[in-house]
Amino acid sequence: MNTYAVKVSDLYRVSVAVDDQSAESRKQGVQWAFQQLLVKVSGSPNILEKPTLVAANLEADRYMQGFSYETDLVDDQLYLKAWFSKALIVPLLKRADAPVWGEDRPLILSWLAVEPPAKKGRASDRIVVSQSVPEWQGRFNRIFSEQGLPLLWPTADLEDNSALSIEQLWWLMPDAIKQASLRYQTDAILAGRLNQSPGGLWQYEGILFNGEQTLPLLISAETPQEALTAVSSQVGPYF
Image (cartoon, rainbow, N blue to C red; front, side, top):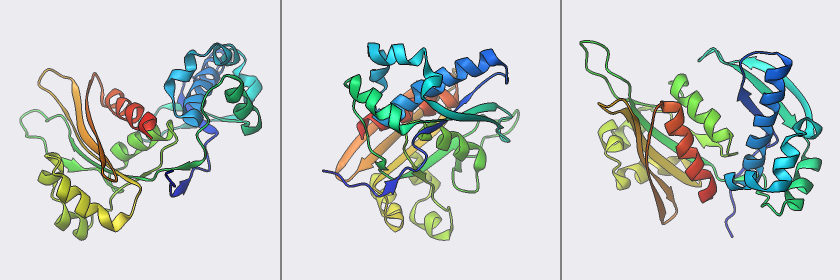
């Protein structure tokens, strides 16, 4: 049995993008949030097909305790933030014969190298996402929070840069990645690179290290958001 290091305190809170604060958008947003919550608490996207949960989604507001709105300063997107009742959600999942994943979750160290699209007449510089790169870090954090998976980002200080160069990360050299990760003492390590192909697709290639086990990841999508969402959709069920 695995014992994980982090207790997720906001497991029953979710946020979803909405168009506006109208009643119609709110109703749709609450249903999206409810679906996201069920995946987050159970750890499995397949449960959304269960008839009991399909029916419950039509009355999602019955399970909600409150909501608010927030505009993300990075992408200027309006989000509906909803929080649901644990006392109602857990019995609902049990009635649906769905798994219930506890609040103790693995802490994942995330190494991510990104090659943004080149600007006209200039070559693109690869960057390592860290605590000082809020745009990419915020995207990944939001997406992984939908799976209830907490991320830790490297500080990208002198010790990190000496232990793991951007070239070693880009080419996913496992020994260098593991060695550089020792100082963080996390449950697992996710290392990957993200770039746009000549055809316009965004490609993510990476490896999840969990003890002696590894999970290779290779994803193509229309947007960076879709690519990173696909990553979390594979990592969440893995645990």
